[in-house]
Amino acid sequence: MLYFEDLQTGQRFLSDSHTLSEEEIISFARQFDPQSFHTDPEAARQTFFNGLAASGWHTSSLSMRLVAESELGRAANGLIGMQIDKMRWPQPSRPGDTLQVEVEVLDKRRSSSQPGFGVVKVSWTTRNQRGETAMQLECAIWLQCRSRAEAASPELADAK
Image 1 (cartoon, helix red, strand yellow):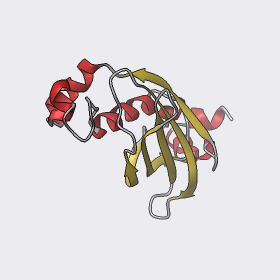
Image 2 (cartoon, helix red, strand yellow; image 1 turned 135 degrees about the horizontal axis):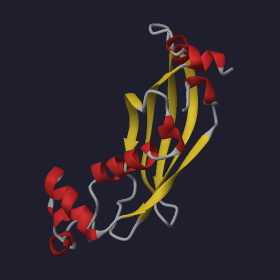
Image 3 (tube, rainbow, N blue to C red; image 1 turned 60 degrees about the horizontal axis):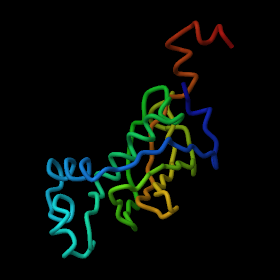
């Protein structure tokens, strides 16, 4: 498990990768973002995207899954988001794109209102197989401190 104390500014985490299929792009879009450039390959050719493009929300959701399954996803209380800043999708994700997420720790501080927790500011960058940025965001996550875990579980304190 990862605790607040385990993270350092500048530390980076790299997720596994996932290759998007046309079927999953269309399926996600039909349920959550039913616009023709996400659901209809023929109609998508006549749009700004000039072909089928995954919804930005699909790219974001997939990025969340990849991060949750990464080493950072072993956070003691889970990846509890507090705030998202500067979210953008500079490059559309397409069928056949293989996406991977890199998360960098930008800053961290102990919570002044909740002893036993810290706030960690991180930057996520999701890239495709060509190294192009498909999604980028900065966010703050809420992370349990080791001291709180030890107070709740004397066995952890004894293991030190």
